[in-house]
Image 1 (cartoon, helix red, strand yellow):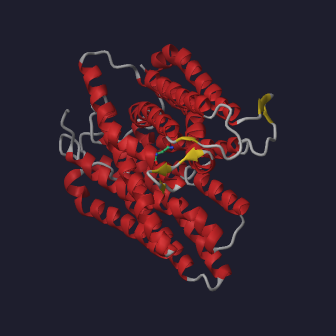
Image 2 (cartoon, protein in one colour):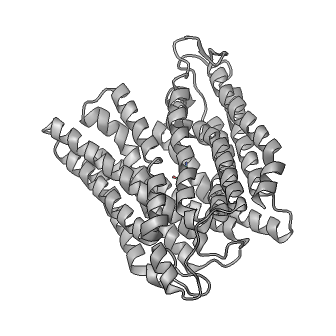
Image 3 (tube, helix red, strand yellow):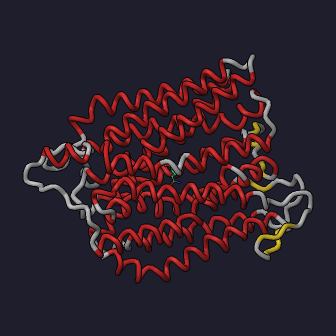
Length: 449
Ligand code: GLN
C-alpha cells in the first residue's frame, strides 16, 4: 500500500477515541433511560431519536465556525473537551439516581454538551484528513478509508467495554467514555504541532487569519465563489440527497434489525444464547476487516487507471444495501410470531451493507473534501453530515412500519403485512436511489470537472 503521512494516524487515533466515546454512550443510553431513569420505551425512543439527529445538525455550525474563525485544530480540541464534559455530566447523572429529577436534568445538560461538542469535532477532523494531502492526490480515497477504519475500531470496542462496565454500574460506562474522549483530545494536543503538516511542512488546521499571515507568498484570499465552485457545491448537495436514503436504510441496524435479532433470530451458539445487542458489533467488525481490502482495491484500480469515479462507487454502495435487504427478505419469507431464522442471514446482510458502506461513506468524505472551495471545506463537511441527521429522523419513521401482531400497514400505498414486505421496502428505496444515482453519474461527473 502507498505510504501515508504520519498525521493520518494521529487523526485515526483521535477519531477512534471520539467514536469510542460516542458509540459507548449510545450503547448504554436507551437502557439507562428505561431501567435507571424509569422513562417509558416511547419516551426513551423519542429522546434517542432526537439526540442522534441533532448530533448531526450541529456540524453545520461547527464547520462554519472553523472555516470562519477558529480553524480545524482549535475546533477539534474545544469539541473534544465539550464532549468529555457531556459524558462527565452523564456520569454525574448516573451517580445521582436517588434524585430522579436531578438525574434527568443532568442527563439533558450532558446531551446538550455532546450535541454541541460533536458539532465542533466531527466535521473538522474529517476535513483535516484531506488537508494532509495535495488537492488532487490519488491517495485520498484510501486515506479516508483508513480513517474510517479508525471510526469503526472505536465503534467495535465501545459497546463491548462500555457495555460491560455499564452492566456493573451505568456511571462507570459513562466515565469510561469520558476518559476515552479526554485521552483522544490530549494525544491530539500533544502531537498536532509535529504531525499535522502538509508535505511541504506547513502547519495545517490553523485559524484562517493565522494561515494567511503565516504564508507570506499567499495574498489575502478573495472569497468570491467561481462558477466551478458553485457547480461543485451543487454536486455535493445532490449526492448528499441520495445518501439520505443510504443511512435511513442502514441505520435500521439499531432499530428494526435489532428487533429481528431479538425476536426472530436463532442466537443459540452451542447452547449459549448470544445477546441480541452483540449483532450490532457485526457491521463495525466487518468495516475494520474490509476497510484495508477496499483501500487497497481503490489504489490498485487507480494504478491501472480503471478506478470508478466517486459517484459511481457510491451508487454501487446503494445497490449493495438493496442486495443486503433482498437477502434478508428471502430469509424471513413466511416467518411469523416467534419463529426463528438462522443468524447467518443477518451476517450476510451486514457483510453486504458494509461493502456498500465502504463504497459510499469514506468516498463521500473524500469527495466533499476535494470539491469544496478551501475556505468552505468544514462547512461543506457539515452539510454532508446534515444528510445523516435527515436519515436518522427518516430511519425512525420507517422503523415504525415494522409489522407485528398481523397488523397491516401502508406506506405511500405500499402494503406491509409481513417481515418480508417490510424489508422489501428498503430494497425498493435504496435500489431506486442507487439506480437514479447511477443514471445521474455522467452529469455529476461532468459537473465535478
Ligand atoms: N459510522 C459513521 C460514523 O460514525 C457514520 C457517519 C455518517 O455519516 N452517518 O462516523
